[in-house]
Length: 271
Ligand SMILES: O=C(O)C[C@@H](O)[C@H](O)C(=O)CO
Image (cartoon, rainbow, N blue to C red; front, top):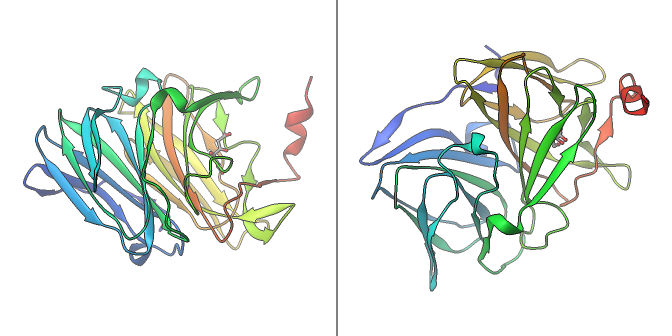
């Protein structure tokens, strides 16, 4: 199995199951950290942030998030990500602590990147999440911009959700962001947390560089994570299945400036 593909774990402690724990010490990434936790109703998870900022995404179910005097009660908007509506998130800056209490059974993503400055804790309301439809033909996808680069709430973290219907490709034509050479390209590491409906499905994700020193094509299943330290990273979804993924990106500069693979960029110009 590729070292970039991580299967879900089931490390359970009381009412909290850690499905993924991919902090920088667990991967080859320097900037991006990611955890996925399942909580039973009334389950509680707490964390102290030191030099990292965190975006807490209420993936499914309802949770209460507390940071100091800030209490965001019963947030979260969906039972399944495949309801395809935006959800609530909370951004917490470095040097702060937070607790998550599950009001109902819930799944929560914790997205981390280096905290470069102290910032306000912020509830990113579902209604404020920008919904974007990208692409044409078999390259259509829907994007929820939870923490895009034009939102100054975070110092280095970027978070986005993407839906791709069966028979379509996303993160396509293949693009990369692995060179710090702005204004043409930014360096951003990335993680992909995947869900697939129906859950028995699979999809394909390739991660490759121009010189093919990195070239991995993975069969990805429900709840797998793919780590993208560098390179192009397209996703193809088989007919009959719907793909959801949550991307976390971070690097030295908080700008998403990608570079398309010149061999495949022509698909954008079709009439
Ligand atoms: O537009 C898409 O297909 C989604 C991708 O841009 C995805 O968020 C990504 O690859 C970010 O670099």
